[in-house]
Image (cartoon, rainbow, N blue to C red; front, side):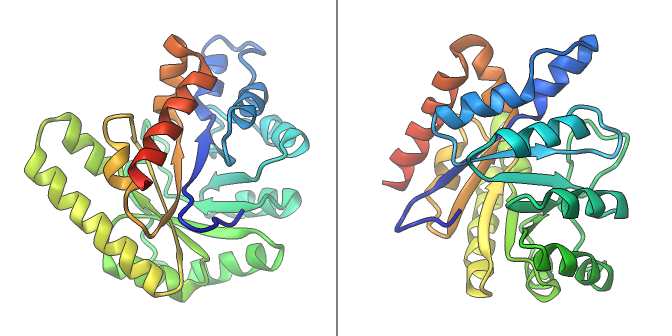
Length: 250
């Protein structure tokens, strides 16, 4: 889905609806239902991370999302043969390649594109040929941005986790330095012809300085929105984020 004018898209990640479901091994809450509610609330797309260990989103969830959604699905996944085959079978609108370690609680850093260029070039090519927009989830580092352009990605998603953590820890000088790096790399990536997205750890308190960056076309936000939905409901949670994004973008 292409942005028009100065529009900023919101992709809603529904992974942690599945986390709650899987905590009891039940059939509810249903991530597909959450995705449909997010769509009705104005989400521009839905993001789901199919992990190798299936700790939250399942293969059946991806089947259901592909069948039910009218907005684009952004399938997050590791760059493995198994995941490539799944993506080629479903052909979602977008595929975002992320680093993945079994012992991590969440994605802890960006993909090392510069250290894996040859393999990633081969991995991306069939996905792009199948019509998927391939995104790489990377840190705010020039070498990674430049490598992303070389391997054939259409999009980079800048990892905002460090910026958000520093904000919530009250380390504001370091936070501002990380924000400056994110801003510089957004400009650099756009200059190389890459579309720029951002995400990880964004909240009502941290979204505005990222949303205001003119090069960024999409934010992918999940954990905070699902958590806030416990108190407000999903529609109100998403509406609150959308309001802050639009106010920042002006």
